[in-house]
Image (cartoon, rainbow, N blue to C red; front, side):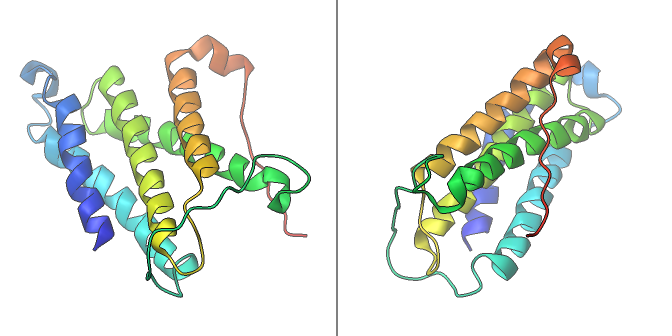
Length: 175
C-alpha cells in the first residue's frame, strides 16, 4: 500500500520534469510520461519486493520510530558502513537510471533530474517505511547519506572530466 502511494507521488514529480520537453525532441517517443512512469514504477516495485522479503518480513506495525544511529564512530554499529551503503545505493541508482531515462527519450538534463529524484524518492520511502517497521527505525543519518549519494551521482553525471578521474565503488565480502 505504501509503495502504491510512493508511485502515485513520484509520477507528478517526474511529470514536472518531462512536461517541458519539446514535442519535437521526443517525436519518436510520443508517450514519454508513460515511459518515465514505467521506469520509476519498476524501480519502486523491485525495491518493494526486495524490501518485503528481506527487510520488512516481520511486518509493519505500531507508530513511527526514529533512531540516532550516529555516523562513523567506533561506538556505532558496523562503524558507519551502513551510511556508505546508503550513499552508494543512491549514487549507483542515479548512475543506472540516467541512461534508462535517456533511452526512453528524455534529454540529458531531464534524465539526470529524473534519475536523482527517483533514486532519492525511492530510498527515502524505504527509510520512512523503516520508521513504521517492527525491526527497523527511521534514521536521519541514513536519509542524509541517501541525499548525499544522489547529489554525488548528479555531480558525476554533470562533470564528465571529474568522472574520468574519480571512481566510487563498493566491494563487499562476507566475513
